Image 1: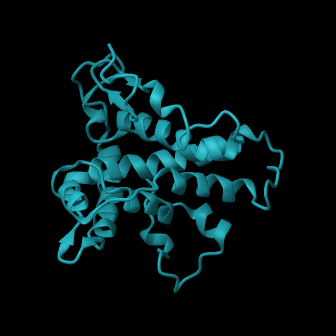
Image 2 (image 1 turned 120 degrees about the vertical axis):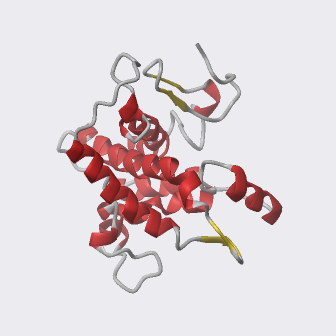
Image 3 (image 1 turned 45 degrees about the vertical axis):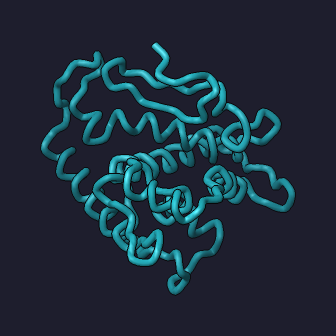
Length: 213
């Protein structure tokens, strides 16, 4: 069963079916480009795929087993680890202000923020496994890791009026695009790639970075 039209630029994880839907419309730029190199596609559509897969392993996914039956399969250790990671993420997003006096709704967007972090990390790991131990080519003066993170950021480019931004913060389960792009703050490799040091605006101390699994 398809839960979206082919023209919808989106993706969804379906716990009851233990399945995912990726409509045709998301399989084009900026999320997927058959003419782009692997680094760019892993950074864009790869992160989206990782995002949806990770929903099967979050607090909601823990309630459904491999057959889609309502049965919690987490251990106490799993739950404790997940809470520690998500508490860090709550603190991180609580510092973001979309408009003067309007902070992001941390509780409302938590599940999607978790999936963004887990999905980006999974995509980065998958990209490096795809290299098979070989060095990534330098293209247009950019390393493979630079192209990976650049593609992720470009996938979340958006232009939004204040009224639309306010409505999204109030009623959407996803953080606005600008803050979804900041998921990179939790990925150690991003710091190494762009030489982001303590004192930079986007710097997070290693102990404050979130690693879901």
